[in-house]
Amino acid sequence: MSELDPDLEMTLDLSLHRQLVAEDAPATEPEPRPAVRLRPLAWADVTRVAALETALFGPSAWTMGMLTEELRGNGRWYVAAEPAVEGAPQPLVGYAGLWFDGDNAHVMTIGVDPAVQRQGVGAIMLRALVERAREIGALSMVLEVAVDNDAAIAMYERAGFVRIGLRKRYYQPEDVDAHTMQLVLQPGPAEGATA
Ligand SMILES: CC(C)(COP(=O)(O)OP(=O)(O)OC[C@H]1O[C@@H](n2cnc3c(N)ncnc32)[C@H](O)[C@@H]1OP(=O)(O)O)[C@@H](O)C(=O)NCCC(=O)NCCS
Image (cartoon, rainbow, N blue to C red; front, side, top):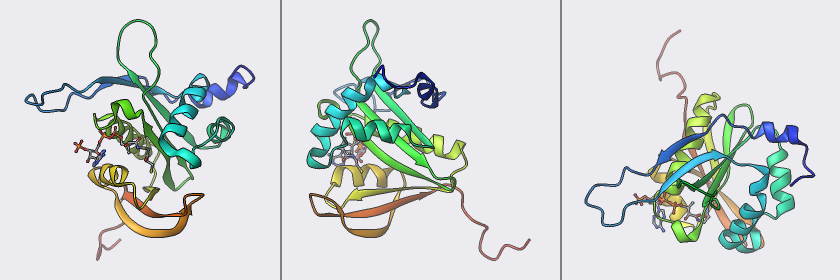
């Protein structure tokens, strides 16, 4: 993506470059979970993310152009998950991002390579988004998820999100409704509290 302004890359320098290893699986689990490392999503990742989008979301996948516009938007914060192995860089296996509107943080997307799904990668990225939302003072996290997306709904519920609404025919061209889900991060004043 050499045509992009290099300054924009700075907006994606998320100050998050740490190794998060999915090692919370119990010792008795037969298959060890893969080690992944989170890092800021870079412009150079857009081609790979667009390919994963197509594999994961079909007709409603974001194109490269849409991804580029999204990443240019204000208040965006995106992470990539890559295999934590030595040697040559590996293709990323997951990506996720949020948009902070000044009050709430919106989960814009989250996707994991089908080859490594159900191994903890999505949960690690979601945890990073929640952590970031707390750091920047978001009151809550909100998202839309297709009503038939059982895997994602289970992941969000496991992270503490609850359903707060239904948006009819939200996903097009699939014509599928969406649940709106929320994770409150900063509870309001306790009921009955006095100043
Ligand atoms: C949703 C998605 C990101 C989950 O990523 P993942 O890495 O497979 O999820 P994890 O392995 O971290 O799972 C975390 C929890 O989510 C739930 N979960 C994940 N996949 C599940 C599935 N297929 N069935 C039921 N529950 C599932 C489980 O509670 C799981 O915890 P557990 O494994 O300890 O039981 C992945 O399935 C994906 O990329 N789906 C396509 C894109 C998508 O729908 N994105 C969400 C848009 S709103």
